[in-house]
Image 1 (spheres, helix red, strand yellow):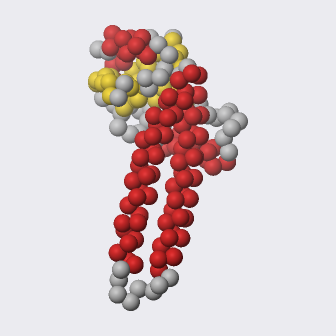
Image 2 (tube, rainbow, N blue to C red):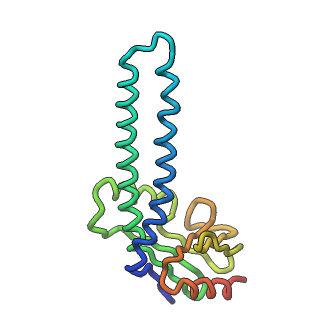
Length: 178
């Protein structure tokens, strides 16, 4: 059995890459808000205070979006620090165990427990017989399965490129796939 983790020097690279994706989504949401609200200020008989109400709601939305971004940033870092890929004779397992992580606050623990129970994204085990394809997207490996009973979703296990000996993982998966 071989265990692979993200090297400490590459954790910041992993978190930046994932945070950039989330930031782009949140920025699009924030930039569309003024365009959705602006026509309301141009209506006939619109109260003069409407622009202040809209500005307040925009600032409140920016605050919420900022808190979501910071929350995601912390969880992404903790995920990177605790991610393990385990390859044994018959399967590959992706494990992210935050159960004993002391840096989680109440909201993080609640979100982690809920996501762990619903999606299985924190624990996914794939038998080599169930691997349908292995694709390389943006440098990461996407292991697609025919079926899985360990988690819900699209039957894809993502293996990030920042793992130590990433090329060895890719080669081993391609060799063991039937």
